[in-house]
Every structure is written in structure tokens, then in C-alpha cells.
Image (cartoon, rainbow, N blue to C red; front, side):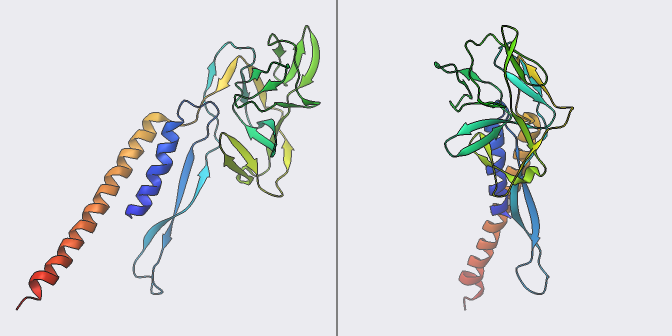
Length: 225
């Protein structure tokens, strides 16, 4: 029980550390019953795995022309040396050569490939079309997956598992220029859950100490002639 609560605290700590990270998706630990013997007399909990909650976070207005938020499903596509990576963080910047990049410096992918701009003064509509001086220069590539469980965390990005395929986003998906999607971590709820986990951890450790004291007394006092 103490080990499970310790792992739970690790997940909650990471969530709280990223409460102000744009596009961050909180992690949720999944638990399952574990029976240490074949008779099924004693039941314990064990952590099965940690999954990502892909629910949408609130949008925050920034007013920056290169800040973009996705309303609905989908991910922006980054071009990295290890293949495409996916993110909901649309706080983009412009490199010295005019390449639209993520905060980490990876090029943003459009329908024509890597997006090149002459200035940050662009207009981007709800469909992701990028206009410079009224002319469309490219369109943001926004994709989804039929099963979001096919995505794994890799730093601030998501990477697909082997065999995962990109799918088109629904017609309801829209791009908001001048906004960023904030973390979907509810700080108050996360803090409350962390306090609960810490108290549970303390209770388990006290139980362990009590059993150790009982064992010590049995050895030192009960067996004494």
C-alpha cells in the first residue's frame, strides 16, 4: 500500500509541476487488485499503468499572432530528427530563416511541408490556412488518431506507437489565433488528491512501524523465560 501511494504521489507531483505548461495533459494512475496467493484470501492494490487524460484544457488569450489553440480534437505536427511528434502546445515562434517552430526549436509541419514565413504578421483562420498579405502560403497540418492510447509521452510531445496511423480531424475542430491551450490540470483538485495520498502513505508507514514493534516485542519479551 505504501509503495502504491508513493507511485501515485510521483504522478501527482509531475502534474502539479506542469500546471502552467501550455498544452500539458495530466497523467492518471490506474490501479488493479492483486492477490499474492492462489487462495485469494488477501487482496492488495497494484499500479497497472499510467494513462494520459486527453481532455481539452482552457484557452488563454495572449494576443500573439503565432500563438494558436486547437478547439476540439487533433494535434499539431512537429518535424523532428526522430520522426513526427505531436503536441497541443501552439505557442510557436519564428526562426531566423523564417521557419515556424515550436518553443523547443522543431519545425511546424504544414500541408506543403515545413512552414516558411517572411514575418510573424500573419493571419490564420479557423481551418488553419496561413495568409501573408492576403495570400495563402500554407495550411497547418492538424491530425488525430483513431485510438489516442496509441500515443506515448516523450518530453513535451507525444509519439505514436508502431502501427499507429494518423486520421483526419472532425469538421468541428477549429484553430484560434492569439490563444494557447493551457494545462488540463486542476491545481486545487490535484493538491487535494496529493494531500489524501500523503495521508494514506503516512498511515501505511505507521502500520508498518506498528507491526515491526510487535515483532520486536515478540522476539525480545514473549520468548523470554
